[in-house]
Amino acid sequence: MKLYFFFSIVMFTTLLSAQGFKGNGDKKFQIGANFQDNATGIMATFDRGIGENISIGLLGTYALGVEDAIDADFNDRVDVRLRFNANIGNVLNIDDNFDLYPGLSLGLKNFGGHLGARYFFTDGFGIFSEMGFPIAPYNTDDLTPAEEINNQFILSFGMIFNIN
Image (cartoon, rainbow, N blue to C red; front, top):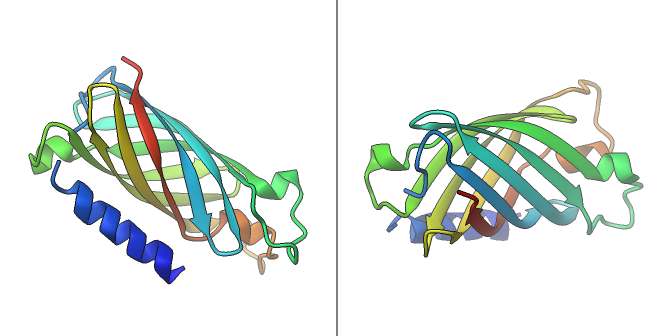
């Protein structure tokens, strides 16, 4: 996990040299890989701008590489979340191609938060890195190892596309 945290710091530091959010009506699609304790997986998001600095969206994740010792079925591996983002790249005024977006999510497994950064190389293509964390799991009892899959710190990175 320390390696994933180090990689996220490096990604954010690298990306802080470049606002990839255009405001109301802006549409973004991200696809990437998730890294966390005891599992790796895939993720996809769709975000739509509803204001100058606000977007809402949908996130889907699926844990592919779950350790053999964890008895995780499909329901344990999948999560779907509604997202709210505060896109503050233009507030920071670093570069037109860069966006930093803290946010909240409401999913099948928990209420959580995230912090992400995007950098666009062209008008339509870029890269992103995002850290996600649970704030309140729905199951307040001790979580089983399978339930912990979607109730822990997650680091994601991948590609982003403008759909405008």
